[in-house]
Amino acid sequence: MMRFLQRLGKSLMLPVACLPIGGILMGIGYWIDPAGWGANSMLALLLIKAGGILIDNMAILFALGVAIGMSKDQEGTSALAAIISWLTVQTMLGTAVVQLIIGADATVNPAFGKINNQFIGILCGLIAAWCYNKFHKINMPDFLGFFAGRRFVPIMTVVVTLLICIPLYFVWPVVYTFLVSVGEGILGMGAIGAGIYGFLNRLLIPVGLHHALNSVFWFDVANISDIGKFWGSVEGGVLGQTGMYQAGFFPVMMFGLPGAALAMYHTAKPEKKKIAGGILLSAALCSFFTGVTEPLEFAFMFLAPALYVAHAVLTGISVAIVAALPIRAGFQFSAGFVDWFLSFKAPFAMNPILLIPIGLVFFVIYYVVFRIMIVKLNLKTPGREDDDTAAEMNIELSANDYAAMAKAILEGVGGAANVTSVDNCITRLRLEVKDRLLVDEKKLKASGAAGIVRPGKTSVQVIIGPKVQFVADEFKKLVK
Image (tube, rainbow, N blue to C red; front, side, top):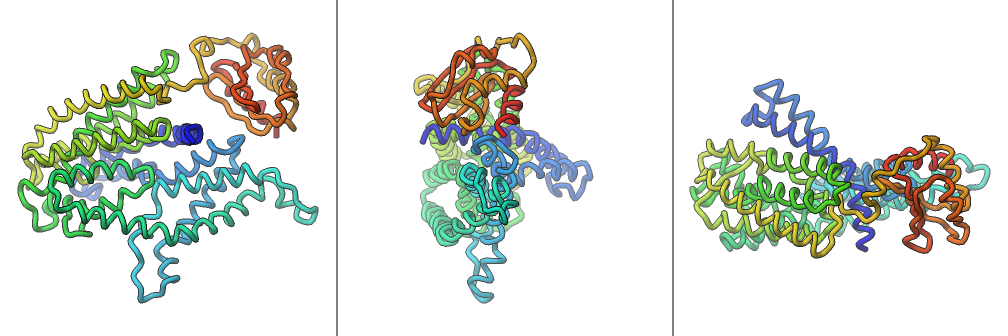
């Protein structure tokens, strides 16, 4: 299970790396025009819409990343299948189709209006990857030969997705409604209830169900409308109470998560710090400046689930503490620096400046907790993967004939018929084979490889160095 989660986390790193720039663009645009969100400024409009291309379509990016990363040879057909799976779910479980199913006079459960979330994106990616791995080499009778092999994958993806939509139709609204009921049940618990909400808000992000709780506390499902009342767009705000379900997120998003990013950077392997640092720095800036935390959270939630649980607990503590103090701040976009700065103008703001010292304390807490857990539990956060060493990062190939090297490696593992999966990390070509006895390590070493690692009965890792991607590309051509 842990191996599956780590592979899933690795698959998400490519789309996650794209998100920070989107969040930053949206944050700058919102800062330029906080009231109109682009209605009063063409520059703000362009920035907000440009950033929204990535942030608003995060679930689709996750579907593509998971489909490619979890498929055997990262072939583009799996990405096409992911889009097909996504469109199938969005159509079959969308509000319009559900309305037709239950009848025009019935009310559609609000859950079906929240079906376009990250969980569904990841699920569609997994469906597509499974269908690709299962059917991409299937044979068909001659008269159906056109649909054989990879062309059969999209067809089966539709079928499998439709089958999965059946239980989702019944399960999704039940889970969503249950969470709304939980949210309504903790309303009278004061600061403790706010802390429980903060904890559940973070804990549910991987499955996209945090929207159910948000609808209770931030909007009008239970007549709280914490966001609307805080900014004065909804009547009924109470000074000292309104904003209690928002303010506690600022110390986490502006300071806590950047502290976690620093801990992950400091615990990364020396040879990987430069690569890990690029991802973590951009994600930390995005979290601090705009409050968009997904680029950073998805960088470790699957690679190190224990850290994510700790993050959820610390978020709950932050929200509870701030709710108990005479401190109120709110947001219209998210709990980053932009909204914190604009909170000073809000009618129900109280001492928002005090969030800075609280945030600095949480920066230290997050750094210490994350660093201790990463080291003590040997968690595989970005830059701490097992399959590369400092020596491997410095390997220089004697010749740059990647095609010839790939051909020699293929001969060494018993030919294309013996290869079931091709992947690569920073320095290694990672292969799965059918028959381990066909692998000839002497031939592999003669190919120019720096070494051979066999972590499992059917796993072979060929150490090549930083230029492994070029060899992997040529190897995949030969296998096809």
